[in-house]
Length: 208
Image (cartoon, rainbow, N blue to C red):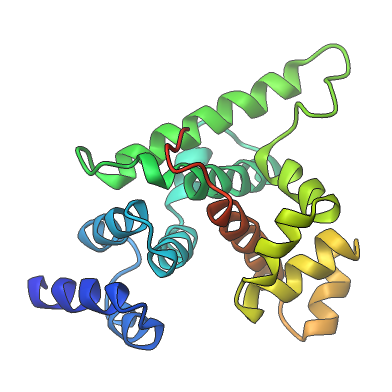
């Protein structure tokens, strides 16, 4: 496994997505050492490592497992997972590797759960800007030129569904039909695409 990790690190350093993805295909999505390697390279500024980390965290189900420990409603879990992906992408520059990446991710998910519950408990309407990270990013993609520029830099796989959702305002079901992808795939790609836009705009100092 050490040799594979070394090869993965080298491929990511070269921004060689083809080789990196080929190496990752043989690794379990939950492999902690692989997530750690990607997180460290993402924290150092690698766009490819950030993209692969977001994909693997989403594929692994670890975010849902953490969120499901505090929430029962599936829609709420999905919202918290989207918000958590956004926060991870934005804050990855703060990851220093002093703890397991899943421990760091768990703290972010817990914070997003707290935010979600606070919004749910609010007895009066919250300010327009007091919403989850995914909702804020959706609004920013639709209105801000700098965010549109970051969106334009995404791989087609993510740019198309995010554009259709956040700029054209199409429902997920219509996007799935237009792109000939499953509904679940489109929802996941929109969440990942928004997270990658957040990563492109991230503050190098990070935060959670």
